Structure formats: structure tokens, C-alpha cells
Amino acid sequence: MTTQKAVALRISNLLIKNNLTQYALCQRIAMPEETLRSIINERYKTVKLDTIIQICDGFNMNLTEFFNDDLFKRENLDVD
Image (cartoon, rainbow, N blue to C red; front, side, top):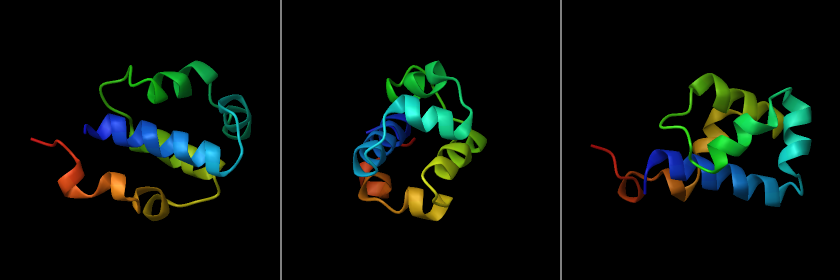
């Protein structure tokens, strides 16, 4: 899978796990809802690390926790 897909799935899974809507997360982190929606729907070719940090803040987690998921195992990612 692409890294964009892995990030989108991770965010979606965290929303479910934390019982949050996209809107509620955006309110927590002062991010436009369209930005988050575009990330989740994989409309962006890449996602800035700063944006992922901002999303992590909304889930009260750090980058290590965010990327500590099987989605990000090398064998699961299509990286050239």
C-alpha cells in the first residue's frame, strides 16, 4: 500500500478508537476539516510531517506512537 493510504488508514482507525469524528479532531487541532478529509481520502500525494505532528497532538500521542502500527511495516508499504 502507499504511504498516503497507510496514513489515511491510521488516522481513520485512531478516530474510531478514540470515538472522535473528523470534525471533532479538526476542532481540537484547529485544522480545516477539508484538509483532514483530503488526507483521509488520499487526495494529497504527500502529507507533511508537520501536519502529522498536528494530528498526533489531537490524539495526544507522539510520532513514534503514530507510526508504531503494522500499517507502516516496510513489507506493507509500496516505496520505491
